[in-house]
Structure formats: structure tokens, C-alpha cells
Length: 262
Image (tube, rainbow, N blue to C red; front, side):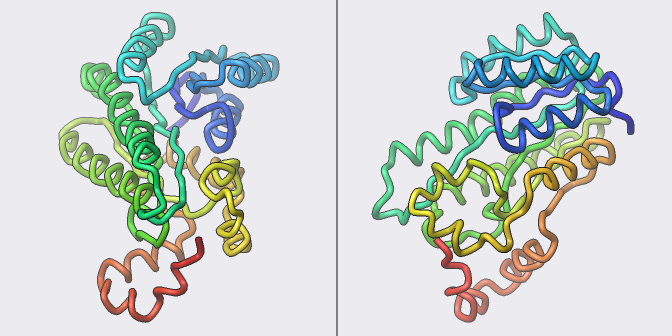
């Protein structure tokens, strides 16, 4: 599948994986439609993309946790840009804390962004895709959605929810030409950890196994061109998740300390 002339909506597009994907799809002839809270950064990215390509990128300010704002922005997109071929639900954040130390407001905010915002965006594009009988919805989850670890109960819960939603939606759309994919990366070298890991302990402990953001973005581009059920990065980490799900009690007894990197 070629990305030429495809309209690709990307949430959380002002930095990290979202920004990388936006630049890469433009190079392949697709029009990125950038969504994030920071209009200054979005405007800069959009200007650079339009200077280097002829795709005509757009950007809109959006806080995905605001459901009413999601409705308004997606209505504008459909009016001004037209159809949406691919939705990349990339916006999200995490805070790594044990539950007894966590602030409930932070957990609630993670659910509003990571889960409810993702669902709200999906609900806005779904009628259009169903009417056209084509499209691709890509939800960025995490290996944390398969394998929970200490000091991430709130974050892991949101990513488990994303995977449950994604898998159910995929089955609902089996008789259509709409693809639904989950992206489950391990730790990536982005600014995600400036919020998630304020102590710096986790980054220090897993630095050797962290994924490069360019690599993850490239793999997401390949997923857009060749849709499949899941993209798991790195593969060896997904094998660990699979083994854990098969033998959870044994895995927790034997490898509990290995999972405790935060």
C-alpha cells in the first residue's frame, strides 16, 4: 500500500514518535494532519514539512482529554481537509509511581488522555471510515499493556485498556475494509521519561535496551503500508510478555526482580 495522497491524522504530533512519523509520511507523499496542545511546536513542524514537500500539511490545537474539543477539531478536519485515511492515536503519557505514593488526579488524567482521548478520536473518524469502507486506525499501546511491572499500576492499567479496546474494535470491524492495529513498544528514547521517570532511575537501568525513536517511527510507517494486527517492539520483549501471560505465577516468582527497574 502506498501512502501517496493519504490523509493521516496524528495525535501527540508535537514531539517524539508523533513528530517523527509526521515528517516521514510527508516524505512518502502523504499529508500529515498534526494534533497536539502546543500550537507553537506544531506550527514549526508544519512549516518545515511544507517547505520540504508539497503535501500541504495541516495542524490543529487539541487536548485529547477534552472530549468536546475532540468533536469540534475533527469536524473542522473533515470540513477543511476531507476524508481521513489513517488515524494514529499516539498521544499519551505516563507517571511511574507505586500506588501508595500516587496521586489519584494523575491516574485520572492518564486515563483521560491515554484511554478516553484515544476512544473519543476513534469515534470521530469511525463513521467516515465505515461510510467509505476503508481506513486504518492505529493505537499506540505499550508492552506495559501486556506485561505490568512494579511502580506503573496506573500507566499499565491505561495501556491494558487500550489493548482491550483495540482488540474489541478490530472484531467489530471484521466485515469491513477498515484495519485496526496496536503498536506495543518497549521503552523508547523520547521525552516521555521527563515526566514518567523524574528520578531517572528507570532510564538509567534500561538505557541499553531502549529503542531509537527513528526506528520505531519507521516501523509504524511500514505498518501503515502493510497493515497487521500488532506491531511489537522489540520482538524479544514481546516474547517475554507472551511467556508471562502463559505462566504468570512462575514468571513473577523467578523474574520479579528483573521487572522491577523503576
